[in-house]
Length: 361
Length: 209
Image (cartoon, rainbow over all chains, first blue to last red; front, side):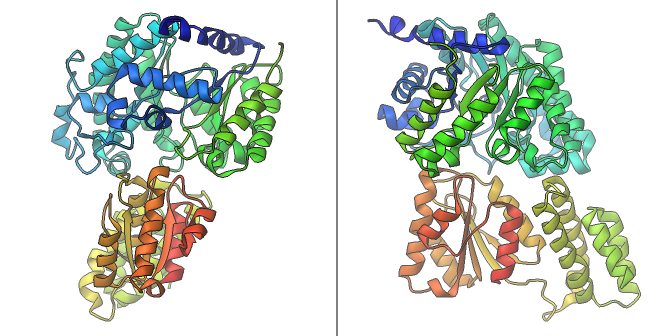
């Protein structure tokens, strides 16, 4: 069997994803963020994995198959790509994913904003690696990819420093808006348009924005400095642009207020992940999703997966699937699986989804 | 004492300009710099820490309060003299070897400094022998270790072990934190405490100093 035929099998799980978006699928599909397991699984260094599109794809499929993950999503260090393209220093390592070199932020003062210019995406940083990554994915699976990018706030934080950016927003709001405008208009809109040109049928353009979460920011900053720039991206690049991974609603006095802001930047579905789901309960997320007539993505936490017993994992996932999967419209997610996570815990999570999330054989 | 209360309120609100005005006015009226520091600013930051722990304040508000505090301390510092040292104790902090993440560590550092603790930040990717050397030289009360990766958590144990083997373990309290770290891991490696967030780390360090 050729590689191409071998990986076409994932098309069925992608059909469950599509079915769950509006109704009851054959089974609740399971995603996982698993790229940190790939170097160990493939016997290669992280330095190699995160610069080799074929290795990263095959590694993703290998880990998915090993643990029974239905839906392969090609994860990579998507927080670094656009920053690297305009000259932010990135550190590459043998044993961990590449990361921003936070000791040398690109934007050290207000004049540095001029460094944010639209790069030549054919040549800049690892932009071509990202194009190749999705090209290989689509070729091997026959499925149109969802394109990942770094959303405006986390991108600005990565080139400015998170504490400095938050202080800019509090004390130098004019400059903070100029910075957010520059990363949005000069970098992200051109980059997303470039990617849309390469992948016109992409299912979604999914912004990663982990730093735009409570308690790192507050509701005021979300409303004033963060959400508007995602909305601008959606206006410029279309409704396929979304930013689903803001977290921390468990810290909010009124979690629904934060969910309402989240819905502005991700109107297509609701995402909840541990430890928020652990704190607020899957019932909160299901009720919110039903109220707004959207599907739900629930994620079980990385630390919980690593440190619990298989029974604890099974019981929690069972609860999430029973509550979240009532009447369908649920996708399930294993958050950033860490190296060292017991294999039996991942399998317990998968087994619980299969047992309680199968609607028809 | 009403001035002191106003100073606390301005600090908690992160209103640096008002805080400086109030501090200067209090000094003019004859309030001791040490009293302004301990009763107004440090107690004010204790309230900030408590509010953060209870999710009544988030990091932007804490950063603003810390910034205001630094501005006020700059005014008071020359007046404090040797006996009026702002420090409540010494903390050594760093991200362990192999780990380059610093956001969490920096937030903890900010909270510690705002709580009136003297902090030496060794940065990221810090080897056990570098921690050890710094402990011997500076004699901190607390060592705070950070890690974001499961792959670097074992380096926390190596650091704790290196300190134990050097015979100075009983001279320092060790607290650990970071996304993958848990209470049980802290106990397993022989740390004195686990802090789930910056506010808790600051609270714990103050108790140990």
